[in-house]
Structures are given as C-alpha cells and as structure tokens.
Length: 163
Image 1 (spheres, rainbow, N blue to C red):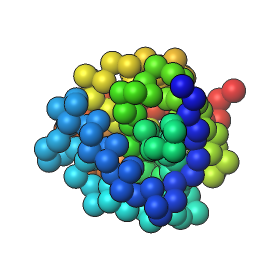
Image 2 (cartoon, rainbow, N blue to C red):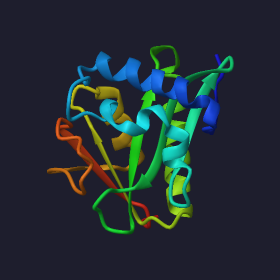
Image 3 (cartoon, one colour):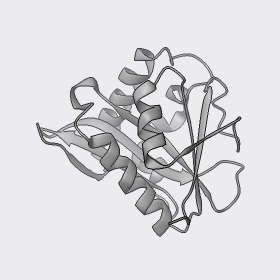
Image 4 (cartoon, rainbow, N blue to C red):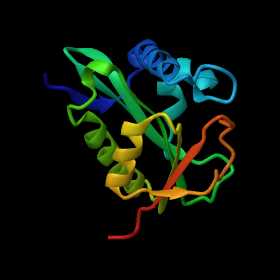
C-alpha cells in the first residue's frame, strides 16, 4: 500500500496528535519525561510553523499514519537541530516511510542551515535504532541540549556537513 509525505497543515493537528498518543504508549512512553506530554502535541502545525522548523505527516488513503520533523535543539548549539516526534502507526511500518521521512527531514535540516542533527529515542524502539544507524547517525553517550525528555535513554547525532 502506498503512502504520501507532505508538510503538516492546521487540519492535521488532531491526527498527528493521535499518531503520537497511539505509538508512544506502545513502547511504554506515556508518563512524565516523554514527549507525549509536550504541549505542542495538540498544535504541531503551529509549533513547527517557523523559519527554522518543519514538520511532515505521512498519509495512507488520506489518513495520517505517521509524522516527524526538525526544529532547533532547545538550549543547544545554534547549528544543531533535533529530529522530533517521528512516529508511525503499525500499518505503515516496514514500507520505507521511515527511511523516506528521515531523508526528507535531514535534507530540510541542511537547507535550513543546520550542521548537526540530534535525536532522542527509547532503547525499546529497535527498528528506529536500525533506521538511524543505517542513515549514518552515531550513538552518543548521553543527552545534549535541554529537551525535557528525561526518560529517553538512547541518544544519537549526525554531522550534516559530512559527505
């Protein structure tokens, strides 16, 4: 089944929030310290509608089944962005949407002028680890910046200027 990736619109806010709130508990990420509790979850379009941020939705049969984006890393170096809230419902996993969305996010991060991309995830998200490592991300010993996601236990970074 095919999918489509496009920039988020205001009308997508409820569906993007549903994806985030469906996927995170699947991996035990529903309490304090996880991004599921970020205020932006209910207003993703507004949160990422700025000059240095972009957010995308993945649709299948006109339904939002995934999402993800980039934005400056809170309390990070000005050249560092964070890959944020990249989640997919089970029905779209394994179809290449993650790889394609990740490539798009990294392309847009470079175009926005970022030289480094950081992300946080959970040790239990094994497929995500494989995706990030295959894309060239390197495991970091600990967090950078100040995301407020103190329950995340896996950290990755990628130099966006390396060829």
